[in-house]
Length: 276
Ligand SMILES: [Zn+2]
Image 1 (spheres, protein in one colour):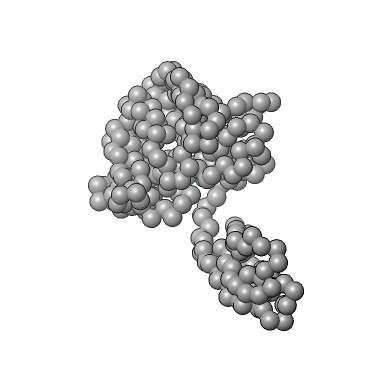
Image 2 (cartoon, rainbow, N blue to C red):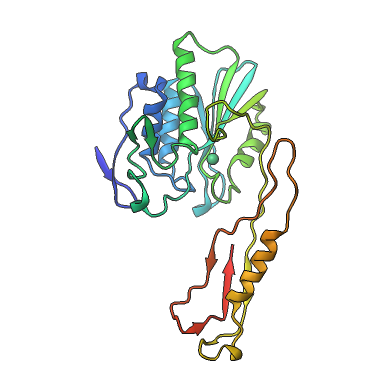
């Protein structure tokens, strides 16, 4: 079956047999072929939940939030005893950007030269596929001692207000807190297994609005160009160290992610601009 993705490229709906679940590449391809730009509209999570139910997990869907902000999440557990290890992850992905810039379409899950190409292959449908395949192989080998759970959110890349933190509150209220947790985020830039992260960076997002005075470029003395002011502000911020890092973490950094002027005229000095 072929359907169209939101960006107009064709993708093939996944057809996975239970035996495929022990193959992480097949699982990752099936997940990548369901576009799930944050917040995940839910299809890839439904597929993942059905895979886990096939393996014997009991799945509790936990959509938190209201209306359009409702975030799909679920908690799935196989077994009831201890020790209890939880695999944590997210099904949403960041937008693909310009589709023409991709070597292969972002939702085709194309394999070339031993590499899987697709939005989320690395962060982190590949990690989730590894969770599924590991459990499938353990189930096939005779089952699980203790219990394994998956904490899956559909909003990690966005505001994440109704994501992992809300599921954790639910887990605490329902006596489901694990003994161990493994987060499947990509952490090995060069070689698999080169590092295990012992923590997670925090983040602070800010928006700067610079006001100026509009004017014609031929009369700059009668205007106040906010673009010029912003350059000075950004350079000062960028040149100021936030901290010096630690034994385990690199120094904090400030990253400019967007500068928006929205000025179509080349002969007008804008009145206002902002950057994130
Ligand atoms: Zn991630």
